[in-house]
Image (cartoon, rainbow, N blue to C red; front, side):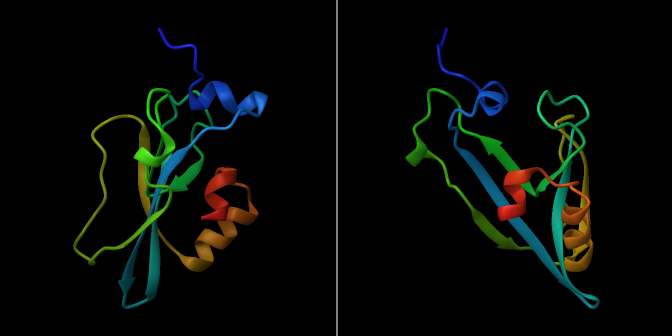
Length: 115
């Protein structure tokens, strides 16, 4: 059993943790749109909040250099993101303006606002 904290345990006490983030977008006839996920409603930490397309924390036994911190990817219009677990409630394809508005309404988790 590890004595290290998970991401959900570390956040309230201000302990440092490391995460992986994938920002994905699609160029459409209406302009560039960003893929975002709505975190699953069952999540211990920040359920139902908007997040980057793909994200996750490194496990306690993984070293920071083992993970990528931010990765960006353009997807073609035919590509649709999906998840086969309940960790993600839904994926949304949002315009830049919709993303900005959601940030203003505090719908995104704080760290994703920086990405």
